[in-house]
Image (cartoon, rainbow, N blue to C red; front, side, top):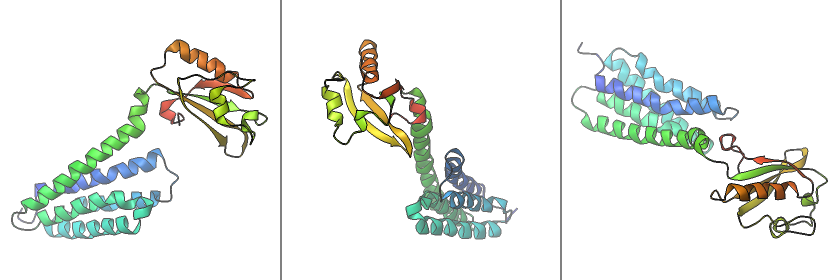
Length: 230
């Protein structure tokens, strides 16, 4: 059919949807953010041109959807809606390719944006959800009771590293130590980060020393997939 959508233009439209899809994946995996609605609506807008059968309708859908996504990206930039910008650019390229004549530049531009966007999305997903499952724990996490002297204003964490009369020094394998409150509940969380090259025997000794700190209990290795190592 003479008025049918060129295959390369439809491929670009599909790539635009794929570039918007990670935003929906983020909403499904994390949720609870004020930008969730905008990301979902943006992904649906990106898919609209795929409903067109005629080239003329396809061009209009791509033009409208592309500019809508770019407007979303600008207006919601600080809220994270900028992730929809690549899909908008690709849709504009798809609309240009659907016009009569050769538009190789549109295919090149849309394809380049697609490759870069999908590559970055894959890297981000890998670092956030996949990579932690292959990481070894590098910290001990413990509960600090509310009555522990570690929570006293006069008690310094440097004292924990150096050692004190009521607790031994933790040792040179420790690279960082921090305390964080538990969000309104009594007590706090103690995180002791150690050098990942530390031998198992030294780690066992370190765990005993942490358990020996005043008011500290439930000492255990952190779990990288849950993100509680920092």
